[in-house]
Amino acid sequence: MLRGRGVGKDFRGCKGLRGWQGAEGLQGAEGLVALRAKHDGKWARQIIALQKADGTWGRYFHTLSQPTAENPMTTEQALRRLRVLGFTIEDEPIRRAVDCMAACLRGERLIDDYNEKKHDWPLFTKLMLSTWVKLFDPSNELAMAFARQWAQVAEQSFETGRFDKDAHAEAFAEIFGRRPSAQSGFEIGYGFLYDAYLLQRVLSPETERRLLDFYLSKPDGIYYVGSGRLTELPPVFASRRASFYIAGLEILAEYSTAGEKLGFAADWLNAQKDTDGQWDMGPKANDGIYFPLSDSWRKPADRKADCTERVKNLLQKIENK
Image (tube, rainbow, N blue to C red; front, side, top):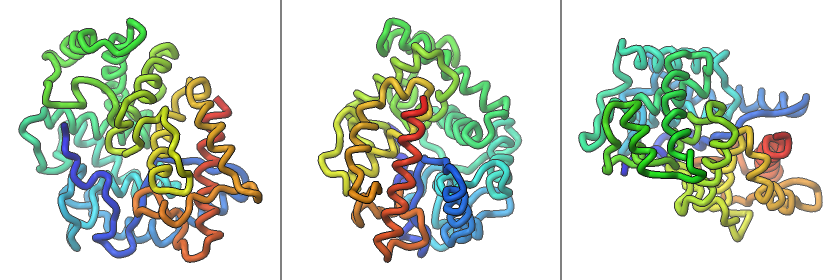
């Protein structure tokens, strides 16, 4: 299993840098005001100030054992945070980062010098880079070509109606020229943040349904997200556990068949509204990973606004499918 050191860590090692998630999208005039506040807020300013001239955030893309003044975060962490703050390919910091990652996909440079020898690190790097480039720029042909390869394997992996490891191994070998390594979780199956993002909008509806069933029933949830088993609702809404759980739902909600599969989660979320029609996940949800969205949670009203925005965006994606 890939260690992914630092992928899910907060930014307490760098003062003022906290939080990232995978959600996006704001609606209406009020939403645009909120988006602009986040876009121009202190979290965005501090992260952008750390971007290097080559478009990265230093020598580490995926892994970071300990934050330092020189390397307080990975490029991946910065991209996740900026994405939830409303940044898109139209923004210069994202464009610079995507240009850098695209150059890596073309073989013109390396994203970093990190390597885990027991894994096919070039393949894993291509998976990571293609995922992030596709998220910000789905018109990129190299990223989309890799996504279609991964999708081709997935179509055969689920052809019988559920995940078939033998069919998966055969399909993987057909596409990549060898059977998947038993040491590499990202090769032998699904359930990683990367495949969950990469396979959005490239599968047939029937394979989507089967894949979502797989993700929902996976005992440990989506790896690198910490969602836990997604068919098991968190016992307490105002909790860090619920925030991680919602992060898993946010990824799955991007699939076209999410409305069929996530209705139970939408019912649960709607039941958590307070008497004012808002959601409040409580101060413990401020874990430096998914919250806060506002510059500060000193005022409970700001915390409730953040929680309400996040839940509303998720419900809209589920209920509009």
